[in-house]
Length: 427
Image (cartoon, rainbow, N blue to C red; front, side):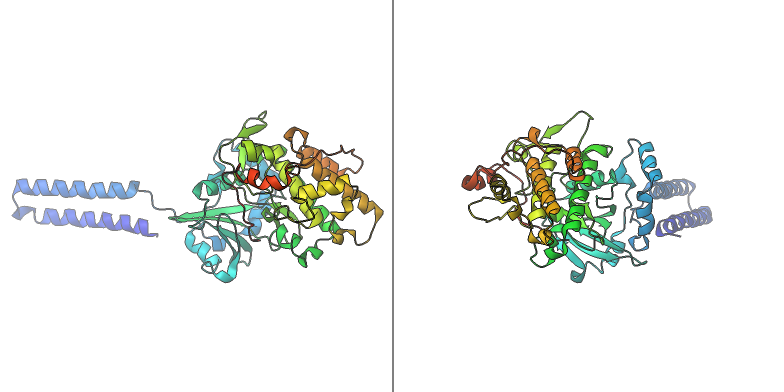
């Protein structure tokens, strides 16, 4: 018996005892005062009982420690599960996410121990958690100093609850308790792409095959968001630190707190006065006019693709007189020295066929980062170009921001009102 049921029983017993005592002393009390006091006492007790019965007890949430992770992941991957989701129609998917108790989340992370901390992003710190069966999870806890809050948490929970794809990170549930706002995800043991890509030693682990698989996986995940999910979803913050890697180095797109759903099958773009994202990955039409679309994500993908090929960051780039990685890639492209861009790790066997593919990938990346959104391909086109070597490629036009050179920093910086400039730690 829980505490609430026990309390109701205690109130009921007390009421019966009161009435018995009242009738016991009835003979020694005036009739009028007895009736009045009994009536008032009965009304008060009945009112208390009704209040307690109608008062909904606080939902503490499920026990995260006993959560069956494997069953949840397998169920999420079945075709039956997808059909069941469609039948639910307009039901709020966020309500279907498990709500875990704070005490069980704290227990899973060893009371949010520093030794369990995986990293920290704009939302807050991320911790590793371990369940009773030994399954591992990732716990993202909203920081009190975070610029993000409940709206971003709700947005991420709502968006990611609508999508299921092998190249998108799985949200397992959430915890909302007083000031605590927490999201629980499947655990990615290899952290994020930038953890390997921009490290002089760890990048060696990303050979040709792994980088190709990562590139194609990111493209497939974006294609699903743009075209095959039930609603068209624009991520708006695609970057290397938001690409998580599982135990087999397969990529999963994460961090949907900034994502937007475009309602209406024929709606291709939207506009906002609140520009969010990360410096160096934001498309020019979004940075300067607040217009975003699936082509905004295509631009971000092009930047990430160049970073994967070169193992160099677009932001904080210093190479000859090039302002950023985009302009550097363009200079090499126009000088017919495109292989100078590529990380030597991908050129180790010196295969001519690989050189051809690398040149093709650079071409695709430059098509994605063209200044005008209408000139960029869709993710469907990108996937086709990546997987079909016979598919013809158009020559790219000059990338966005590359022609501004030394003047771009002041122009670009003054045009964005809410942009993440700092680089987040790997998680």
